[in-house]
Length: 210
Image 1 (cartoon, rainbow, N blue to C red):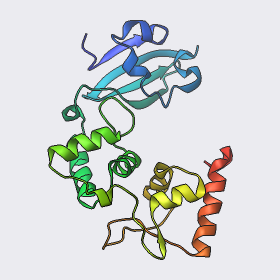
Image 2: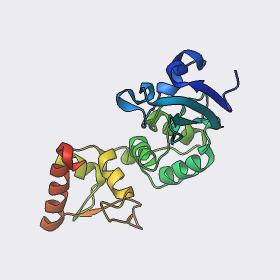
Image 3: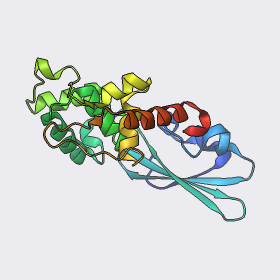
């Protein structure tokens, strides 16, 4: 069945969409049972690109709600932003970052692996090796720069994940630029900086702080 533009009564959505599993892959607008509310009239499913569908709920009364949902695809080449993701991935790999760090950065920037909502280190490794970029043994461990803390060091120090740090760098919460010599994000190992990071991590540990 062609999903490019299909309409379904809301109560029959799951039973009529072929292979409904992709639609449960990520449902940001439909949490807590929103798709089956009695006030809904119908849903329009539109496949905007190979790896994404657009769901439009038409509410009784004429109002509409729209959200885009990523769906699994069979290969990296089928990702709509695969070309730019690959270029970014290889640029990070050439800076000496390891696969896990690259995966966290790309995930924070909105990219993903074909079958997952996030970028997997295995995806990074596969693309990196195809381009014959090899990590030296000395690069497989977090670097130590005197007077500064790297992202992995900050993450360990405050009990957060490296993704947590990268996510806040890319959304502007942590205002920091890459060091031109190392290509790394380096935090000054100073009391004022450490106190700010501690407060941010503590706030994020509380539900109201996220």
